[in-house]
Length: 112
Image (cartoon, rainbow, N blue to C red; front, side):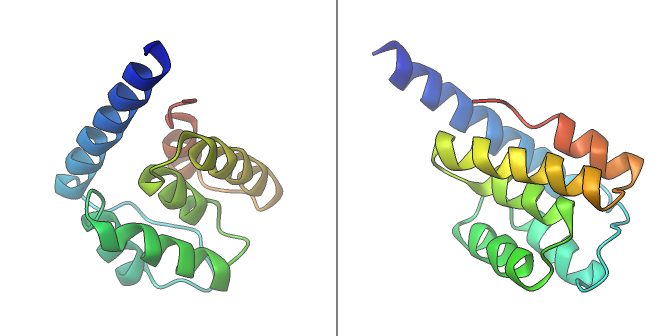
């Protein structure tokens, strides 16, 4: 039971943070193959069903962009997938010299 309550609390926290991000002003991304407008659209959709698929597709096309993996983590419904995406985002950010803002967003991802 405790694990289930923790998962529900994590899901609620992610949905709340996604809703807050949707109202937040855009932040510049350092992706070479992903247009800013496409990223902004995906961020505005966090909390909706389509956002996960959009972030995953962008991450497949632009595999050196850490902030897209942040989006994958933000939209993952499964805690194990969320943790894996966070680890991948951290590694990608280190390898590909992510911006300070991107590091801040990635570091703020929950571990659960």
